[in-house]
Picture 1 (cartoon, rainbow, N blue to C red):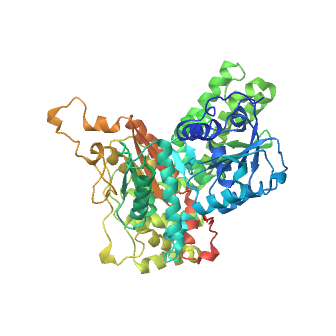
Picture 2: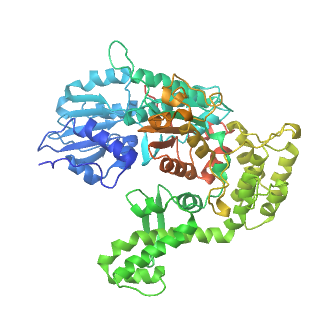
Picture 3: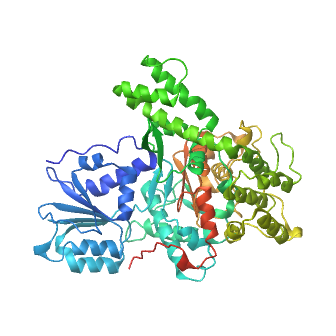
Length: 601
């Protein structure tokens, strides 16, 4: 007998919980029948989707007895019905059809088919003509994005970076196809949030943002046609900002000293999995939101983390009267051996203390010397607020230091170039030759394809862009830089974005376009700001990847503007090293770069 349904996946929050609830209502509740177990068949995309917001225990609670891959050969189970949660692609639909080639050889009793988004007529008709007798349900559920964190989503298409910014793809259909895919995925995010936002975009320096914004606006309009008379759901009190990656190159290469950003930059964390040794054994820990301590400390400065985690360990240890005096990882391991019931309580703290100590080991060996230089170059001022008069003089000690690796030197050179809005060809050539990075020079030169000035004539060098004054905010000397996207988020919520720089793709509701503004002298009962923020959302999408510091900004701004939630997303999540590797490949021929491409045909 299948168990009764339970609530959302335990410990999940925000976007993850929202996606799980939508899957539950659109899929599991839709085909539920008491005392009946089912098998669920997934493709690669939906496997990632389901694992991002639920666990096997949640599926068991929904009456799912097994999870299978639609692409693989499977043993027939003709007495059980199957749920197919798949993308509307030829490969996935062919997998479904092959399971029901003939009535006598059908793998399952019946099929309940749920597509992540719109299924083209060609695929639908192919499926209908081949196995319609076996299909009990066929629906589109409109979830084709991944909830990475409670306020962060990705489209999981890192190849979009190459397709959108490589000059070798500019005159092909690949860029148009990837733009269409991104727009469709963003619309499913809006649908899941039940929002029809006003769509805006950053107008310069490239036109990717404007093209994508227009596609999204058109698809939103089409999606929200609610009846035969083509009445359209009105715009909700939310905004969607679409931005090209080149809008803030500094935040992508700067060394961050907040816990999550620092760990993912300096440590070999893959698929959110951190590997460490304790008690002489190799162990793994997944960095996820179910870990409340991780959520509590991930956005804190490393100095605060190193102070807080040992305190927590001492608190737990003192409660158990298990230790006295100075704590170390070695004697904690001994404690865990002796007290099995104590083990679970301190495992998380030990993991995060390991991460923090690993980060500090890297920091002390070489990164600490870099950070002051990076901050001075990024801001144009030193820790005392004095203007940096000669950026090259600031840069040279880093380039001459043999303890810094090639990536770190390239990051420093880029910050120098960004700080002066480009450099001369002669100067760039000297830098590349002196540091002996000829083979990696495209990590610097190819930023031009993102609309970032790299080589300019001395006469055309521009002043650095003006930034919001944050001199009154308390910061660590080596963490003075604030991501540009935080300024953008705050200005959007306060209705201060320049409409020439941030045009709308559509008519926007009064609370967002400023027409609802009133004079401060009138002192209305409810200000336009309160009206706008009440239950509203600001969705920010960056074409070509977001950094962990930009993700942090979404949480910080949401906390500051309590009733306006900021949700940030991109094609994928960046680390500085991965981004530089991607930038290096931009001028290579397409056939030398791995492009994942599965068309809906």
